[in-house]
Image (cartoon, rainbow, N blue to C red; front, side, top):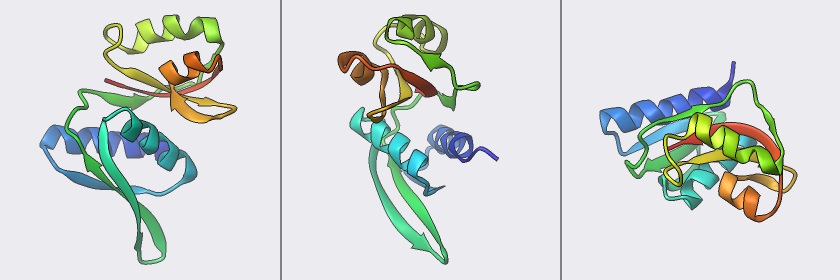
Length: 126
């Protein structure tokens, strides 16, 4: 099971059918990815709620996502290789973001380039 893939797929489906919010499994990685989406205005808000004995993440959608998905295998990316993966996963320049796991945390590819960091690709969104 890939909880990140399930969560991003759920966001994509809820965006397509026009829902305003969705509930996701609350893990550290999913929270970090949702915070990156929130920082880049793809998601309005996210809050953690308790649903029985499990914690869930209630995400309010901004209806700005055309496509979202995980990148498998999770390629290791050096600072000078971002352009190759941007061309592969994003339809045009400055239209979407790659979500990258770096030593400083999960962030977008533009933040990683600004901080001179490489990392592992997790997801794309545009």
